Length: 478
Image 1 (spheres, one colour):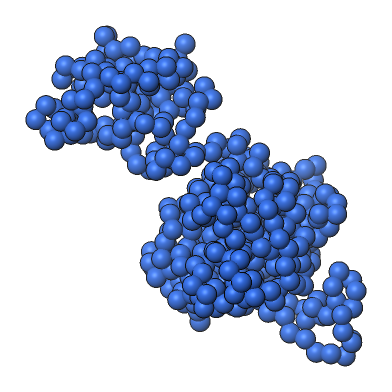
Image 2 (cartoon, rainbow, N blue to C red):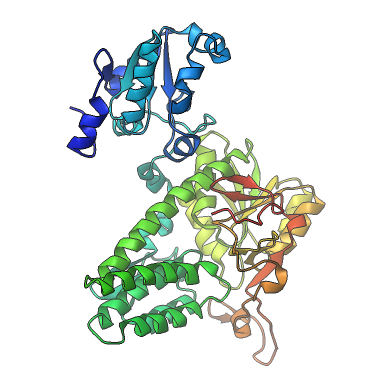
């Protein structure tokens, strides 16, 4: 029984398929060893990149079927003349049926993969990326991630409270901070209960909380705007907080004007964003894993989040056995508390180091590649990340070690270095370590939370579209 979205679509797919066999995925799998059979994927390149491919399938745009398979075409001699049977593949089946009909009219024996690439995936059969590297399903991605990077453990809205995964106590305990107000969430963000993507994930759930509290009032829109303004102030350098809050707020306001539940609209939109986010994590990770060579020493900084951790997991899965050197990252020790335990949890060889060791290890030849996240990237290629990133990039360049930054995109409102506002935090935070004073109370201190790495120190920006030059970002990329 073919499973398609609607009966109407089902009829459309199978209209006029007389003489064309619609074969299930397991049957197609058995025919792949037949030297006379060729699988032909008629999806466009973006679909193959997004949804994966069947290894060995030949990519041919649906619109080129008549030309490529014609006996006067150069593709005929090089590809199609060598086979006698063709199995056509698309997303769900419609384009494959049309291509098979054309091929049959040209004299070829034609078949169609039932339910398209979805049927292949649902049958649990192996898939690859267009370049032949491994393709990971959402379920596989979830199993590769450590505890603190799984979406349910970052932040969620439950029973009138925002629950934020307490990274301040990890790895010594796995707990949540319960927040009953927007202010509670804002304080949790400011006091580093969460970081990385955590602040914006917590912030958008705080907007759901506020929506629930005021959705029956007269000043609903202003109430959401006030909540968003408070949450944006928690991380002025973090571009995504502002963008994500604007996104979910628009969903809430549209829904509320239509008389429906704005809180439900916020939570639906959050789920959609997170679904997409984890898909993009996986794509960036796949590009990052390609940059890793067997037995590479990888330097990182702070907590580079899911794309980096997934890249290391994929590299390990591919037999490359990376060894990751993790600076402890003062003053909050994100490297020691988050990065190192997360990598260790998923079986990566990890070495914890102090923040002043990277140059020495580079000089000894133990570091082959440097990879971090990026809190912000300007249109002219400046990378803003945890303070200490730039000094490592300088050392890496001196030792001819490439530096790559994983990034969701660049901010079109940040054209250059001059447009960046660096957040300075309470200097008293660097005068102790985990509650133990490290100097006298009357010593002055300074604490810029981030630094700026110029593009000449950056080998590439790892995006979901591939690795881009920092000098080629003028149009943005996500």
